[in-house]
Length: 256
Image 1: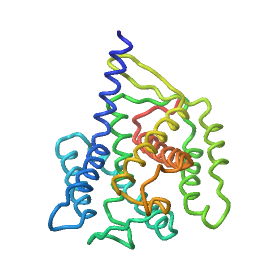
Image 2: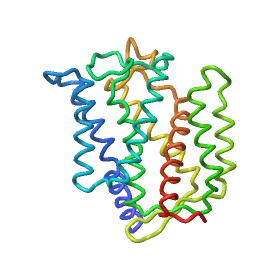
Image 3: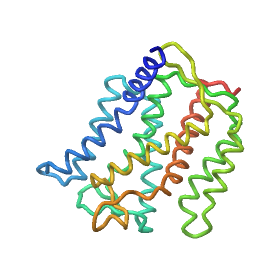
Image 4: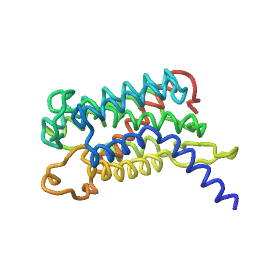
């Protein structure tokens, strides 16, 4: 019974940490089936995301430091979106006033929502890191993973080499977290895989509601290729490393 109680408590904390992503998914569903007046759908989504972000900071659910992290993710995600849409990886076929080179500005909030989840979960579950690699290893690794999203269009795709390097670098690293007064731990690499898988599940939901469109979904919706899990896994690793590094710089976590 205690194990079940802990699982329910853990699930509740996770649900609270996912508040921003839940609002995005609910907005995608609402605007998909109920046309809203005055503005195109993409612009309504941008307005909803802006209001949600303002409310989370105003209500104290997010701190100003967390807002800075989320803004950084918004810019990183928007840069990736601009490049990928130009390369034809996916598209945003609907109209919108606030579109920049074919990319609606609300799209950056989908990346920001991942950062919101990480920051919220980190604080709610009192996350700590054990045997975290040095700064001079983590930052170049995160940079190489992010750059590969761009360079693989012109050069070889080294994602699997980078994935292997992640396993080597974080082989002895653990993440610890607290659930109702009890501490638990799991390998950092496993946490990457779990978060990446659930984001892939969320991606299928998002494309079903028309958040964006892959080339094979132009005529009819179909399941996002399972190979995309590797892409999300690497993106989660970048996200986690940025959040962890910034918190380390702020002196909030030990290095060992």
